Length: 335
Figure (tube, rainbow, N blue to C red):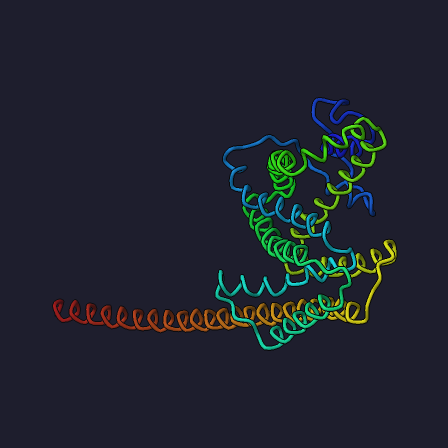
């Protein structure tokens, strides 16, 4: 559907290629609308067994992330939700060390201690604290670390963000069906009258559209940036979410709770800043090594050219000497 919408917009409302034998090249749109249209899919997709199964691990992380997040929100307040999921940077550093062997620098380690301190203060200051909700929040943080990494990996392999979205949604739609049957059957039976209410399906459709747009935005962001930048935006979103949630639901806040939330968010932003600075320094050192290697190659090439000139001069000298010797021998024989 999105692919047809894109072709319709670019063709000015007509059918692409209807005026001639060859489809006319659509005009390039400018401004915000052009950016939005450019993000729409350029073709339709079918499930390919050569590509689809490789995206299954990414879809599992996505389904677990959504499920555990919703279960976490069932037990904790919206204002405490960010604290419950605040260990994402800590888990990220742990997995980087376990899977990749990357050591954490001293500034980054200090940021992680700040996050842990804020996590403790937030738990201590929460009035409606739930251990079960906190455990589910921790599990959701683990999936939040894995999902963007796996998504970026599949995008690098397929080089098509819409193919990644297609396979992810196809797998998730199938995986959610048994989960709904296992955990929600009794609730659906008790409230089956609401399933015939058009207003219920209207808001479900709105929520589905918003969720789809969030998924597209997340995948586009991962394509243009990195999983680390994706988590930075997630922390900013969590800050706004906690403040708005506390205002809408009139959640009672304690001093420890407010300090804990602010410490977790501040530590997360500092952690992201330190990691970004480390990546910049690594890229600079890598470019410096490339320049040095290029300089060495140029010197070797120059030395090689110099050696080639010397060899040519030596060859010419030897050849002239041989020619002189031959002419002298010929002159002696004629005498």
